[in-house]
Length: 277
Image 1 (cartoon, rainbow, N blue to C red):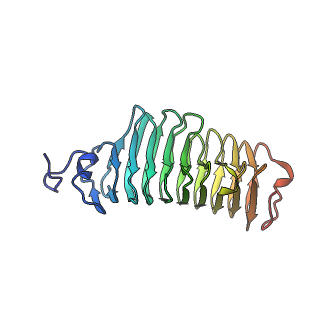
Image 2: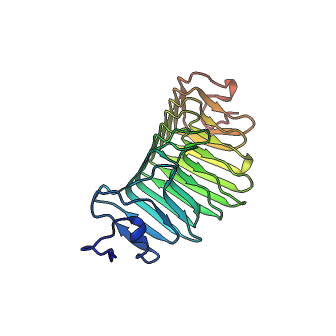
Image 3: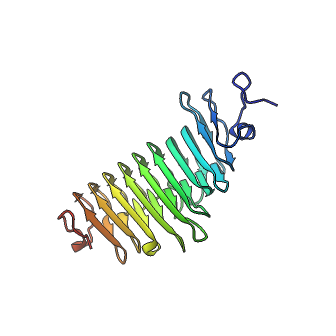
């Protein structure tokens, strides 16, 4: 059995993780696919300097995180669904997930999701400088889904990321927990449904800043029963600009809302720093 050393490396992430201590790091040394992996402890996977990748097809998930208190970082890797995988990264339990410079694409089984963040305990998601694209299959699918379970809370920070051609760009919902998310410097484009879909009452709160929500088939932002704040952002070319009944959407600073195929009337006061509803 390989010792996973530099001179005798492991063939797969699953093999390497069994030989890596908690809070250790797994590095890629060549461009070969390293296989799907389940992570149950704090660890970093970093394929910087190579073209490390995972292919997760036939209903599988690329990376599953399921470890109480685990802090996991996924960096510099491509996760490909091959049109039949279900999830790029699936987070079930842990303290925090960091996704940095990761490309997740091509998941198409069921409600396909690029990053499915459904913690059973309070947890935080960080997505930075990443590409989540072409995960467009199935009602409920999304580029990023934030939906804590069992009354847990979830905090999400999505920065400088591209969410293109997914079913919805971002979905946020909770039955009896809470979601608080900040989206900044991010492009959400060409979704087959809504750009952002936020549900489940006042326990879901999203703040969007310096972002572009463009050319989505449904609403740019569908707040339903959630609370959404938006500033310094572009909303253009969508089927509907903003849907906010009975939820609320508030504008701060300057937003550009133009060229959408339908508008919801007086809720779209172009005056900055005032409520939209």
